Image (tube, rainbow, N blue to C red; front, side, top):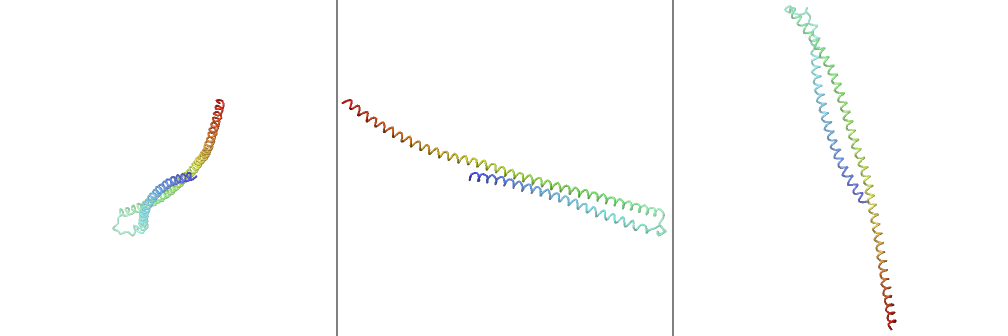
Length: 212
């Protein structure tokens, strides 16, 4: 039983150390991946924030120009302005309105892209969490298999110890039987020798009597 306990403890300690090392490496790899994903997401978010501020400033500039344009009417223009200059002003106003509409359209596109990006980040995080959960489940299954293996090997070692103990008991019993047999054989040999001596003495007496 002592041998089985020592072997079981050594096996479990070795496997547990290996699995702990594997688990540590796994967590380190997951942490690096998570850090990289967070850094990429932060960089993309900062870029989108700068782009959003730029578009906002552009839109405000166009809106201000469009707001001040109606106050400058043809009646209020100096006489030195001719019709071509007025037409240029109208064209500029139309261009500013077009730029305003384009800026708003770009802002809507930006919002749509931001929504898609955020949804992609959320989906990626969910996939990362599911992957971590799957890996943790695999590690737990490995520990369960290890426990079953240690238990089975412990039972096998217990059987070996039981057979060894039975063999020791059988050997002791056989040794006792051999000792008894040796004593019995020794006693029988002594008895045979005594009978042979008595038979020899009787035979000698008979020979002497017959010779006389």
